[in-house]
Length: 157
Figure: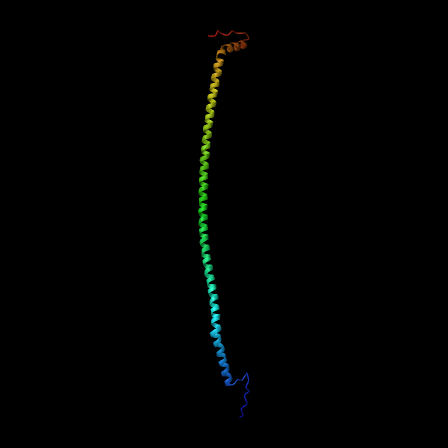
């Protein structure tokens, strides 16, 4: 049996070619692992740190926003309570002012009625005092008209 010659080429390398390729591969891998991979790892670590830092920063901002919101809601609740208290106080003051005005009006009305009654009583007394001397004369004159004959008034006393 005759052995066929082996073609030596890129598809059928020889052992020294394989060893040279293996050495070159290990050399390239060593350069990549020693120089490029640390740089890539450092860049990836920096990105991770920035991303994690941003996430932590975002969480901090969200916590601060929640705290500010809770303080705002507490202040708003306090303001609503204060407004309700002021409304109630104004309602009470208004009711008190209305009651005072009503009492003042009643007092003034009573004073006016009393003054009017006194004025009427005084005017009546004055008219009565003024007309009293003429009652006899007026009565006799009225009686004369009714009877149709003139009557003389009795003599003044």
